Image (cartoon, rainbow, N blue to C red):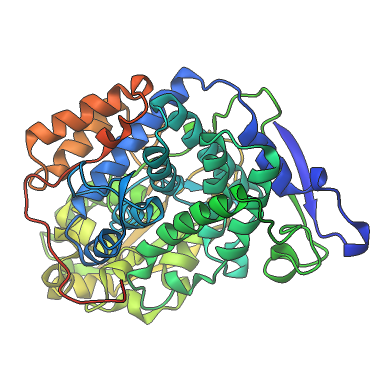
Length: 505
């Protein structure tokens, strides 16, 4: 890996393209280095994972809306949309839009956390849609997805967006554009223009993840993927983009991030170096914000201990303190100062960003379910609300340090839960990593990805359709041009909901 120093330059410098981060990203995308076997396997795992969560959400409101919008843009030999038959195809940017919302809706697919936050599986819908449209092979799709992950992970490592309240999909636009550049075997110059364009149009504030969180949280990455497709199309037609988008006097860094005196270090593979960043990412066993994954595992084991101490009476819990990282405290904890995070009538999107709610339910239920744990009647249960409102969070420097560690053996996303009882006694438990994390107690492998798919596709997808999809994706490297539509899944086990509202399209 090579370190690239990224900082603002006066326009008078006329910074050469070859020294700009967007050009260096494009050069990585254009590098034809073969994909390692373990990376190929993980790409397949993540395609399965995306399909799992997409089919679990296939009849949820935002997904129904996005699918209706895509259905208004049919295209012969285009791209498929989750839930609909493989024979029905649509304009690829709209298919990516619909599939991106389906993948993101339940907050249930993969994650990477470093200087910033990300769900790198969001790269897959736009890359897959264009691969279907253009008749790419399975091997070409694998290579492109590996690029998308590589660029996103390394941007997330090097450039923090959150501290300036810029939404993390600003790293997704460039990564998806780069992945598309690899897929289409485009020249560095074309990918460079697309990366500049994609970043320019995908920067937005994090209000989408603050206060009363709405369905836009699911649409935001789909929007970035759709815009990345449009950026690549435009660049392929010979059009330019705002440059230098990272280093210019009025660039994203200068005006939206740390300003004209900022200096960021971004690591990227050298020419000929394999793209392996996908192996550092991790999926979710539970449908909730990633910082809650380990704490759900901890709560499921701690709840019975609390009941043993209280004789089954939750009211004997006086308070619960979560000592955790800066991010967990300030984004999903009481440090966010969001009253909505304590509201039993809050949206699902808000509840999955409330570690207080998540801890309360996981302690009481000993499990987490992508539907039942968020049901309005579950959130309104009297003893749950009382316990929920007794939970507070605080930043603990040691957990913040572990969160930001570059050493995988040290890096952690957990915390310490301290339960104080009415009699003054305490119970303290801590956890560093989710059980499903690669270094956790039960790391996810191929078997677990398939089991997750089977479990949450049940009821929406027939067993025969599940088997057909799995056979196709497990044979991904051998799929030829025209066969990538087999990576779609039809909702053969349920009737698709139709949005009765009419829009423009």
